[in-house]
Length: 167
Image (cartoon, rainbow, N blue to C red):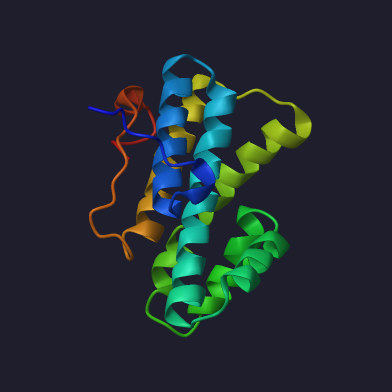
């Protein structure tokens, strides 16, 4: 039997890229590389936003993929995608409530990511656990509307967190 070839990252779906980055984040967390773990978890949140935006603009509204890709780059990060694309896109829909409900989680994940990548700060174990919990929650809220069976495993350490139950 021939070994299966891996699909190049650039050719995978957003959901597949989220899973790939999530498993990388879990591995980094388990090895104690908490700052890199946080950056990967934040990447999952941003990829989940990309998935929602693409599903809405390309699939539902039939906008060209090149335009949507340029829009995603213009929005410049999770904060921009959330504030400038997602909220306006769903403003007059029932979905706005669930998007507003994750505002603080998105801010928490994004702020910690920015502390690491823009200021060179390091993240401790407890903060990384909470970032993983919040990132997982955001990703599932965003993605499950489009992929009902989508799930991400929990980090085994997260269940011992002092800030609440499992994500």
